[in-house]
Image 1 (cartoon, rainbow, N blue to C red):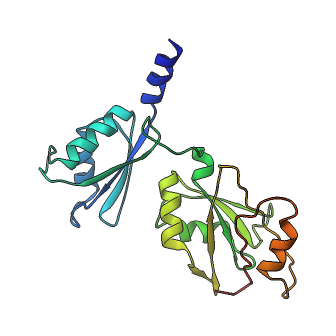
Image 2: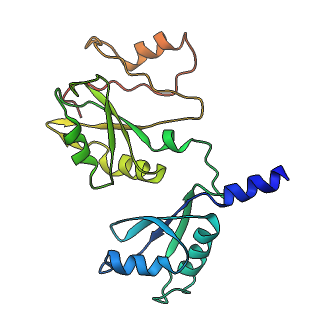
Image 3: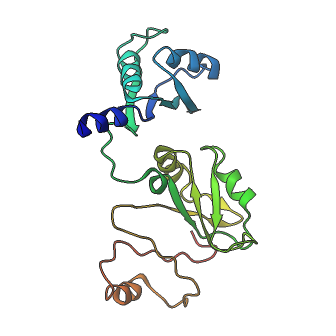
Length: 216
């Protein structure tokens, strides 16, 4: 009984469907009409001839994937579709909160919430939290986006984005047992190798990156 209830609950959770290869002239109304025939739509996030559609249930998302990929839709066309998570076929072990959050380092001094939100606006609505409360000043911040897929998209498209002569570095949150530690006030003589030797005494180190102000 408990297993059946768990399956029913899992199947009723919202599921995201990524649809690629949309016509360049397809606007939001036509896009909504195309996917709405398959179920209740919680949100649609279009960009660059693709979109991320959140359905209310896994069954609706799977029906849409079949209908859109085999031509059984209002336009009679085949689209590339992929379930991105949230339902029974999701293989991710990350929590949605962690998977949709990015660490952004190498910010210029005095960077504001509005500046960071403007950078991420092309991806979607972003919630920004700075390392120092109140003034919004600091060399890093965390940015939470609406879904893990949008976080991955932001990392691909905004990696190295230049903000006031500072190239931003984006790191995805990892909920699989790893954690990212930011260390400030390092000597300019510090190297990745010397830091690796130092931190290896505390445990396994996955990656070290020194980000200097104004560096590439």
